[in-house]
Length: 329
Image (cartoon, rainbow, N blue to C red):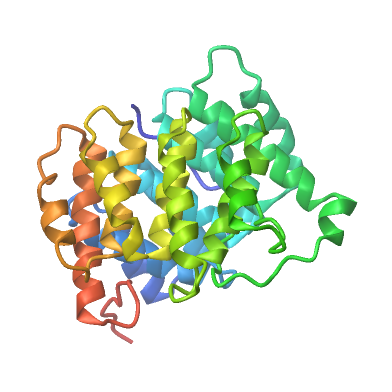
């Protein structure tokens, strides 16, 4: 794995003099800062970047020089959530760097799909079809291409999607809510279907599990859990991500099993750890996480550190998982 050396595009504005962004950028890019603190800085910058702050976007991208694959993958995710074209050059560079960690490249491809720019189709198709490309990157590019094509199609524009409880820009839109859990589960587990359609079933099930007191919630969570046995590591990792969004106690056994399976792909185990972090106030979850603080996989170790910090946040009842820097006027 080699860090992506990325410079801002030539059209970038001059560095901001906003003391908040500068303070957050300093923390985010500092290799000596605790990882959990860097994550809090990142989510603070993401909040600003989603309000069209170009300095915040550039601050996030500046951390792509980090040695942490976990952090870089989260940078890419946050840039995709901005849906801002200013993030595209940074994300393309990460995807195009074949020496970069596959988990980071996958997240960059997914982020390009989230932004939805037709101009990204060329590079996404290139790596989808590239001979010798890693499976996780090829599969992510396949889904990202399908998402952009759907978003810009007449069919996509005609679809009436129910307002989701989740503000995230997902790799695929949920299917319409007229489908039953049984039908969605069948699509979720059908490996003959295109991944994009299976993802749509996944996010449809997610929406049937929120809020957690819905009568469909537990059956939907249990249906999703079956996806953790899928042959695709990318697919299994996305199920764990969805469980992190839901923070439903019924997912704890499946997440614990995924994290505890030392033969499981590290990208799945790390996502399971972070999902457990969102359930940190549930009895026994912190003890489960602490068992993996010295895991052989660095990305799992790092995820457990962040997850335990998130668990403290959940128990502390703080308003937002973020860093509020002290700045002088």
